[in-house]
Image 1 (cartoon, helix red, strand yellow):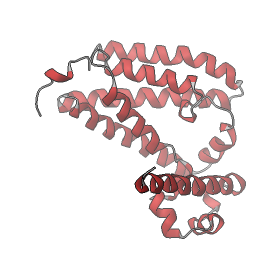
Image 2: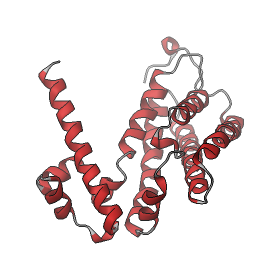
Image 3: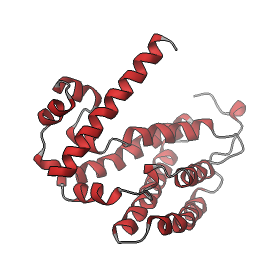
Image 4: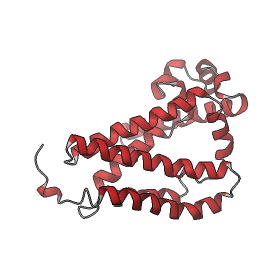
Length: 216
């Protein structure tokens, strides 16, 4: 492995360590009762190191957001030429569910995490900001894919709302006492219903030959 590859692995390991330590403190004491300085001390790193990985305190807890954006960009960029935007995202959501990925919402252990989140106005606000950031990221992806600005903005709004709704419905059902396996079983239908509705609005948008895309 190259030195650059080793550095990246070390960076990711440090980031995970800090996040794990922070999450443990937040679960034990509540998000608003823990400072970044306390996280840094417990993780045996400097405050500067914490902020180099997590620009905001809220991101220590909501640490999957960057991964979500990266995945969406990759899925849309790498989809086959004959696959629509909606088709690619539907496939991706089913993959998250089948692989029991935390971003599916239907996983074990989310109840304590979401209780902490919903007890903190700062975390709730940051979740809303994540939705807005997803919208902006999707606009950029769709425009790069050839969409006109107005089309990209409208479709991105529908897509981001759909993705957040799918995730939140799974979490709400788990928090409501439904067994995780039952939630996972029902989420298959939820995903398809959500994307069927999305498809009615977007149709087969995004099916194209990359070689014939207009220059931008």
